[in-house]
Amino acid sequence: MITGIEHTAILSTRPKELAAWYIDTLGFKTCYESGSTVMVRAQNGYILEITTGEGEPPANSLKTTGIRHLAITVADFDAAYQALKDKNVKFVSEPVEVKGNRVVFFTDPEGNFLHLLYRSVPLP
Picture: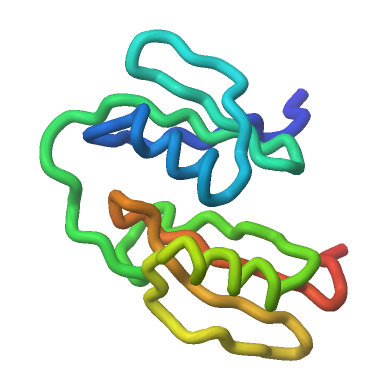
């Protein structure tokens, strides 16, 4: 039976450089590397496989069909937001708070959307 989701793949024009951004900017760790594929693990165990893509990326917006963003959970929203600002991360929205949850959207160097997420009450 299914036990969960291990990883998500991101196709990149420069996979090693993009993996380095996730390591340097978000504190992920390399857990596997072979050729042009680098797998990086987030602090909670979730893995991103970053590997070489082909062709031009499709038009990308927060409303384009398909996987749209990765939610990066944080315990201290203000500290995490400031740390990303200090690293000159490109934000595509201002922080908002809804029902005690805080969120702000940003992109990695190749335009993939991510957002910081603080939940005042975890999902059940």
